[in-house]
Image 1 (cartoon, rainbow, N blue to C red):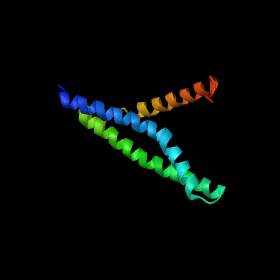
Image 2 (tube, helix red, strand yellow):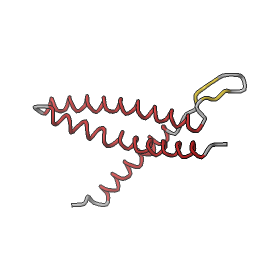
Image 3 (cartoon, rainbow, N blue to C red):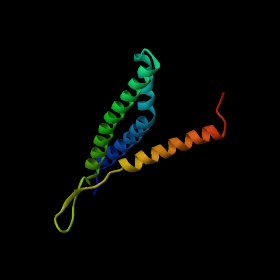
Image 4 (cartoon, rainbow, N blue to C red):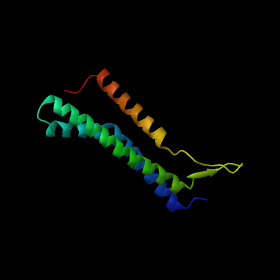
Length: 120
């Protein structure tokens, strides 16, 4: 039986994981491009800095999302599974589904925004 505090903690971690995935797809690229534009002197330099900063930000955010996924698994008690023949493996958490779902939601929002007309 799951304790109520563990249930609340796992739902909070799941919420933070969803918000982190949105940050991964929106804020990290936008922030990297913005910062690259501020730091570079000409277009080529801004482009290279932006690409490097976006890549570094996504790598850093991947570590954070992986940690949150592991924390979710620990709060739900399902981090390691032992098969009947004694093999141990790590169960997958919600990260993959949340990451793909947030990407689909954001792409759908952009398509609808373009299809229905951009607000002026």
